[in-house]
Image (cartoon, rainbow, N blue to C red; front, side):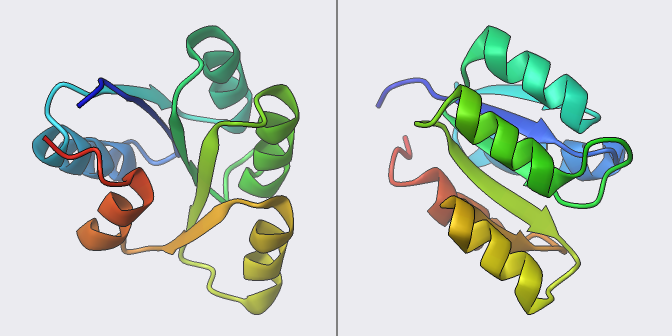
Length: 121
């Protein structure tokens, strides 16, 4: 198993902590990076080149949809999934159109692990 890097982008520190705990428990040895805004997430993406990005949709400043677009432009191969309590079809369609995943809050561990793939220890 190779070591992977996951970037968690969410303005909620608690949401990042909960997601971090799942990744660190189920994917020991993986690197987990955090960003509290879309702007910060873009900067981390450019510097660290993570394998996966879990991105909240509703954030102040640059929202998740626009952040995902910019991330795909900068790093087309990064796997991105949007995470939101907003389960409206237009948000899902925007995610599909960009080629990114879509997970709902509250986050279900099995869905997150499916997004992270079969690189389990």
